[in-house]
Length: 155
Image (cartoon, rainbow, N blue to C red):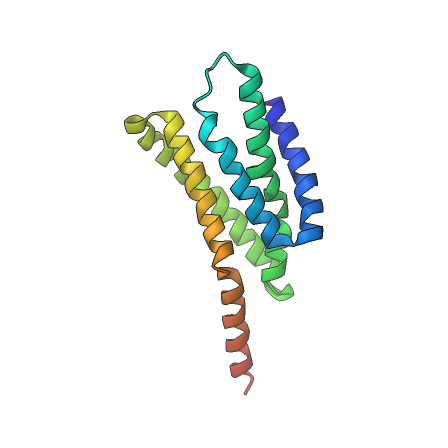
């Protein structure tokens, strides 16, 4: 767990610096794509191989969770000042609620496919979902639609 914690801290720093250089969306996408290098082998590692397990946890947390340090900036860009607190609070609470769903889904899937495979599936599913949201520019499209609606409303 110490390796995972250090991975998260280092990931937050590295991905923050990277986002300043190449942009938020590219950095988010690269970090999440890199996390697949650690997601799939994590639950295949023998339990007594602590060094490899720690290295894999470090890498997963540095990429998948470490890039999560960019989420506040990502949300800041999409919510206007008037509703920024509401929007950010709503997103964070929905994410926390999905944690409840994820644990139930992992338990249910774990019965049929084993816990390691179930957790791999859950993490891979949400990583791919976030990549699709970013890749399809869904927040940009929603923001443009809202601005278009507001401009027609002014007339």
